[in-house]
Length: 232
Ligand SMILES: Nc1ncnc2c1ncn2[C@@H]1O[C@H](COP(=O)(O)OP(=O)(O)OP(=O)(O)O)[C@@H](O)[C@H]1O
Image (cartoon, protein in one colour):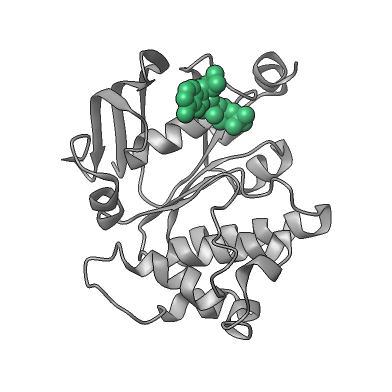
């Protein structure tokens, strides 16, 4: 298994957000994490990276326990993170933003890895542009490029299509599909667009109130399940 969560609880202060959370995912899969706002999807991503205040239970990457590792060490296991809101540094150039991703690499590469620019020609042609000047879709490309600079075996994407113009949602979806199916990078994504989830996902995880309430192959994600756990 690429990633395993075994009875994980995760906390902000004394508040437990994830509750006895268990799942696993195979290498090469695209896993879609679904659920209403506030149920703990972002907290799941942050728990994988070690960014919540505290967690209990076991987290394994390729069978190796990482729950005691610091966030930068987890990145070194090949986990790239595209946070909600993207976390782009507006005053830095495109080049500088991508280079931030390389700091977590084990080989300490100081050049922009070729893959980042091959996937995103716009970024290749605008390396010295200030990142704050980019459009929403271009900033999302930059956040994905920065995560790719880690050299990831798995990419965590928190609402990659949020705040992006409808015509660009499709484009981001195509890029993610290519990373997953052609380059073999595993994906974990939270997604509000059920259509995008159904198109990209191999497996799903439905979350409600900090718990896994359903999981399985994406073909098993019925409309009834979506209705029950996603409509307000
Ligand atoms: N830094 C924090 N400190 C305390 N509580 C937090 C913190 N971040 C999130 N929470 C709480 O944890 C719960 C889960 O939030 P989380 O952001 O993981 O949900 P989500 O499913 O990703 O929702 P959204 O789609 O709105 O981002 C919420 O009740 C939220 O108020």
